[in-house]
Length: 414
Image (tube, rainbow, N blue to C red; front, side, top):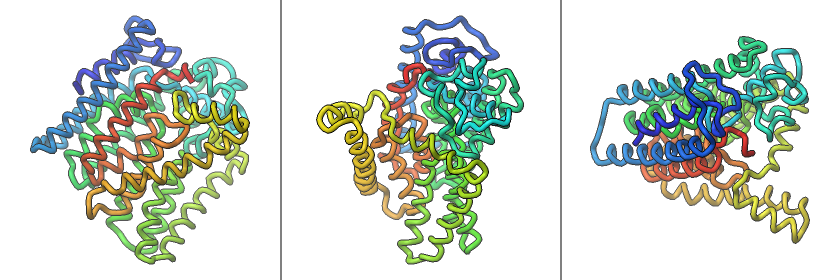
């Protein structure tokens, strides 16, 4: 099932353009374009098979099957290298990355200029919902995108290909680190390196969440294996760097801070927070506080389909749209914290707080947040691979697959 899902994901990517890929094919391997119905069915079947295959592999390992983790890593690497050379599937985010990078490479400000204002071939590939939106990503992400656009120049397919290759390298780096640092290297490989669902969603979609996951693994390793003030400052700086890619990486810092506060190490906790804050101040200081405006505006968005969308619709009819949006903004963090507490009760005894706290928070976040996509599960999956909670890992795979079924549309549906 895992192998069949990789084949189907690859087939959809190689048969671009179709409703589950970018609007223009950028593959080296060109197959006839799929119709909307065929690509939709193939993608849905691939997601279901990848979920079932991963669950089956995890179950087999829990019953004693113990393959060589290096073999699993190599098998996953082959799929990763394939997907890195195909048209992105399931989302148009890589087209947005390319457009923002092109704006920055030309000397513009992606936090003010939109892809529509950029125009040309880059804007044509951006999803409808983001064509008139400035960048919601951090400065580090902008530099990453600008470097790719510098290579790609006026050819968006080349910029996107460079982004796909860089993302694939990040995915493999995370898998290698997990194999070397996880409590159970085999389960870590099954949850990350050889996980066909993650390969299809993260690598096939080319999402920046992969880079955040790499930094998360490094942060946790440093926090668990070393001590001292220099360590705290380094951890805080890396957390700030991750937040400079996507602000959701702040969930990662919560684990380190919670662990230090539980030990009564207030000064060390202050050092981590200070280093992270300083890093963010330096990063955003290069653009100005206006770089946070698009992120603030996007925080009120509700994905479709979503229970929050239903709640907001009926609440708007009763109390007005403004009050309904404010209610969602207050309620969803409370729901996230409640879910995190419930999930934490199922965490294995003795698991380190530096891993478990950001894990349950990031897991609860993708369930409770009004705007949630399957690739947001990258942080939770990387952390789960470190301490290997069997039941929670299986639930995480199911939730990720559920989100993927609703939101794998090549960016055309939202």
